[in-house]
Length: 177
Image (cartoon, rainbow, N blue to C red; front, top):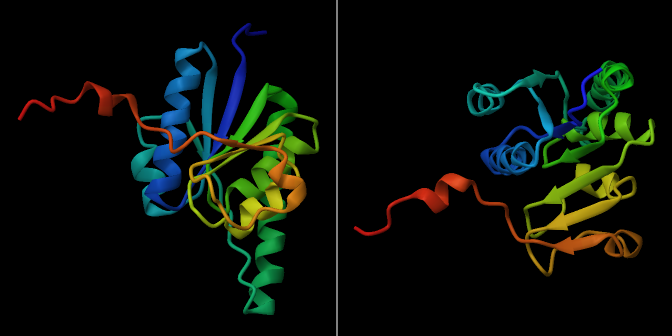
């Protein structure tokens, strides 16, 4: 059994979510943690995670305007939930971090139901539906804006204002020109 502590970072769909996840991955790897990313199956999910240890999952949004889509996507996300649940049973991560996107729903819920600490990062000024739900499960919620809207009073007690994570490459850039 490996002595390196395993963590999972879930994110997908947009560059904002994925780049924040990549930044978190850099920080956690620098601290000696073994990082695996959990992402969706959209174009940017493949492109931006192409050089990383990643598992692509067929997660879907809950489209509230179409009852058939809601049911179909709940079933699809339950399949993802159980796949990740059994993965976590074998891997026993020390924590799971969600950096945004609907892929975080089933992946963080799977960790929560195994009593693995779950953390979320909200990069937007208004909390999305997935993070509203996950805020009930999260041990801590990291926000990028001091006045982030959409979190319940109970979730507010878990909030830490950290700003948006920035990749280390930014600090190595030559700004002399």
